[in-house]
Amino acid sequence: MTNNGSVRHAIAIYPGSFDPLTMGHMDVIERAAAIFQRVLVAVVVNPQKREPLFTLEERKRMIAASVHDAGLGNVDVTDFRGLLADFVRAQNVDVIVKGLRFVSDFENEMSTALMNRSLSSVDTVFMPSDPRYSFISSSMVKEVFFLGGTIDEYVPLAVLRTMRDKRESLR
Ligand code: PNS
Image (cartoon, rainbow, N blue to C red; front, side, top):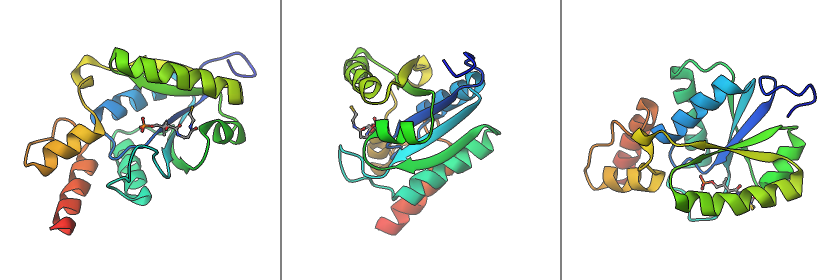
């Protein structure tokens, strides 16, 4: 997998919008950090889907604080714009990590993984979501929170605090 053939020495990238980070994302980060030497959480600057609720700096800060609180010393947070394949090559990353919740995730992620490998020669490793978090998504967490529901179980504390601040600033 790496130049010396060891997974333990591989550098993994975990890309996403993280608008915001959820416990599902955190679970993937923690498990990847236990497998790989270093995990780079890469926040896309402009998600294709829609305008993010949180700024790039807010999204990165929430991840950095959550990773710090979880005591993960081999995880770094960065950002990228444009093609993931270009960023992966520029950073000398060995493997892309993606979490899978449902079959529908697999359908999208499979073609993305093949395209990314074709463009960069870097493979994607899929990590099955922990069943506790398989129904959580950033968009659902935002909807529940802004409609008054409790999301404490679904996001790290640093995210909950930032979401409360965001709600205040939008009032
Ligand atoms: O958290 P998300 O929104 O599922 O993350 C999607 C993301 C950011 C990983 C994906 O959209 C991406 O890699 N965007 C960068 C642009 C790119 O490389 N597109 C081609 C992929 S085939």
